[in-house]
Length: 469
Image (tube, rainbow, N blue to C red; front, side, top):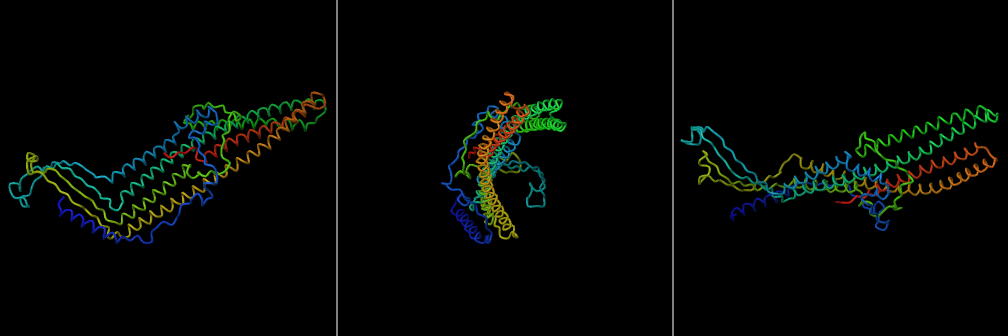
C-alpha cells in the first residue's frame, strides 16, 4: 500500500474517532445488581460443598429405576426440544463469528445489451448490440474498531451457554420427575397391600358380627356398621388402583413409551436412601443449571448493551475487488481486461432521530430484567433447598415417632391374639387391634415414600448433578 493510501486511511480513522466523541449515551445505564452468595446467607464456611453424580439415581440401588431413567433420557420429546434449542443457539454463535472475518465472494455475469448511439459511447459501440462480460472476486472486511461485532459474538456465545444450561436443567428435571413418579407408584403399590388386607379384615369382622347377631350378642346397629365398613374398604382399594394406573401412564409419558405398558413393580422397602447434606451447601449457586442459565443470560445482556453502545460510533469497512471485464466474450481474457479497486467505506451515525438511544435504553432494560431474573432464581434456589432440608429433618422425626407407635400397636395386637387363644377375649378384639396395626403400616408406607420423594426433590434443589461443559 502506498504512503498516500496509508495517510488517507489514517485520516479517515482519525475523523471517525473524532466524530465518535459526539456519541451521546448520558443517563443510560443499568440499575440492577446481581446478588452474591454472601448477600443471601451463603458463605464458604456456611456448609459443606456437595458433588452429586450425574447419574445420581443409581445410588438408590433399584435396577427398575435405572432402566426407566435410561429410557426417559433416550426418548423424551421435551428433552429433545431443549437439545434442539441448544443446537440452534450454537448455530447462531457460529453465524455471529463470521462477522469478525473478511467476506469474499465471486461474481460472474454476461449481459447482452443494446448501446445507445446518442450516449457516451461512440461508434462502433454506440448503436450496436454487444455482450458485457464480468468475472471478478469481491471482498469486504468490517474493521471492528469499536467492538460492535465482537460484542454481538460474545452475546450469542453467552446465549449458547444459557441454552446449554437449559438443556442440562431439562435433563435434570426429567430424571427427577421419573424418580418421583416411580416412588409414587411404589407408595401406591405398598398402600394397596395394606388396603386389601383391610378389606379382607372387615369381611372377617362382618362374619363374626353376623354370628354374634344370630346368637343375640349384638344388635342390627353393629351389623349395619360392619356392613358399611366393607364398601368403604373396597372403595379405597379401587381408588388406589386408579392412582396406580394413572401413575403408570405418567411414567409411560416420561419415558416415551406412549400407550405401551411400563414394566415396573417398585417397593418402597427395596430402595436404599442416599446420604445427603443436612444444611445449605456453600457451592449451591454454582451447581444449579437454572442459575447458570440465568447468569449466562446476564452476560449476554451485558454484551448486547456493549453492542448497542458501539452502534453510536462509525462503521469502517474495507472493500476490494479484482477481476476481468470486457465488451464481447473473446476479449474477456485478453490483456487490458483486468480491473481492480480497493478503499475504505465509513458510515457515520450523525442524526438517527433518537433510534440509537432508544435501542440502548431497551438493551439496558433487558440487562436489568436479566439481573433480576438471576436474583429471583438465586432466592428461589435457596428457598427450595431450605424447604427440602426442613422436610427431611421433619420426616425423620415423624418416622421415629411412627415406629414407636407401630411397635405399641403390634404389641397390643400380639396381646389380643394371645388372649383370644387363651379364651380370655374375642376375635373382634383381635381384629380391632389389627386395625391399629394396619393404620400404622399405612402411615409407615406414606412416610417412607415421602422420605424418598424428599430425597429426590433435595437432589433437584442441589443441582441434580449439573456439570458445566
